[in-house]
Image: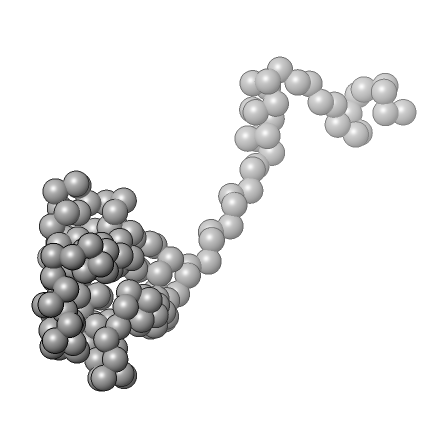
Length: 161
């Protein structure tokens, strides 16, 4: 698994898994547009690797544009390093098959599960500290503040005889 870029290190992460949260929630509009374009470039690279004839022929058609838009919509919440890694893994696993976004999402799921498992192994959950017990003096002060008078057993009160 690749190391995070400087920009990705600054992204908010899930404290339970260490994974970068969806980028559409943390990037500004310009940065998100640039990121989406880079995700689209990954499709272009993949298409050139896998489909040397049909991809260029369809460029500029509504179908081509739809494929690129679907790819960007499905994958733009993931860091570019993870998308690239998922594409590499798909090529390794299925070198003769042009992936669609579902194939890459499947690979992303496997990558993220491994990352989350590694994070959890390195960062076991800490036990919650025990709630501090309230002393009798603190209890009396609290009751006094809310102006309650509670009488105790064995005192000089006739209510308990």
